[in-house]
View 1: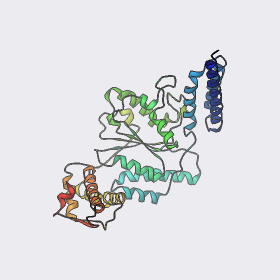
View 2: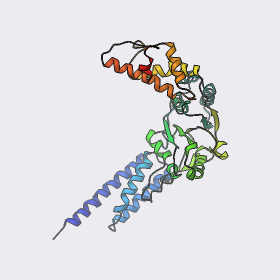
View 3: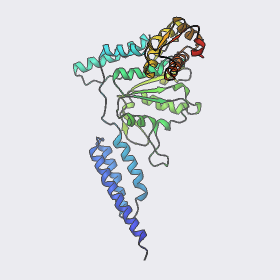
Length: 358
């Protein structure tokens, strides 16, 4: 008599029972909202009931994945804000030249949080949704990262360029074959905190066909009256996003609906003059690349005329990307020469500029 099939069935059933025990323990030790915990337990009980009648095997994987997701979300996990105004100014000045208006707005926000903390008030203050608008290379993304560093928060970037569907943000129901959470909750799980800095990058580059639906979700994300109970289709339970500090970026505002603009605090990112590019190249980019390559300013000497040449070569580029590429090129080429045994100190001037700038 062939007993393989019953034995395998018994083994599968035993494995599922063990899996259910583990999942129940995970639910009980997680800080889930009570009603969501009950909902998850109820789903496991249904699988247990189905097993008695020889079914339920196809549902355990779906239920297990769902429970893993809800238990891993940071329902009550937050980072503590760094509220040292002086240190915040130092960090922003260290990372960015100029941008006084943007820096002042962040310091104002920190000041309000500091006063609330001192008074031990339970009132909540909604962070302003900064909307950094400027051409490519003007420092929008890097400034958002600096804000995260200033506050001591995790940083999340969600690219909107080419985003094709609101489902990407909202998630897909666990009952569907392609079920998964949306980008918002995926990001929170990854950083393990419910109050990161979330950069909504290039919100003007959404595909035209999906723009209306995505902007509808965006309004919900940014509105303090709505984002405290954001419902991802996969999780199917309200998640509080009100602790997040959202920052949006765009090259221009032409395609952004008025309803979204009303929830944003627009700050224009300025284009840089040649003199500003020189300052940024010498004081910010150059030290950064030296450190990255393990070099010091003893290894490279750059004549002032070269800094002016680098700025001029950037042409009408309003940002600093072309300047950044050339500064990196100089440091990279010197690093190669040092490793290749060609010397330890190199001077870049008009006589050899083509060797390093092309």
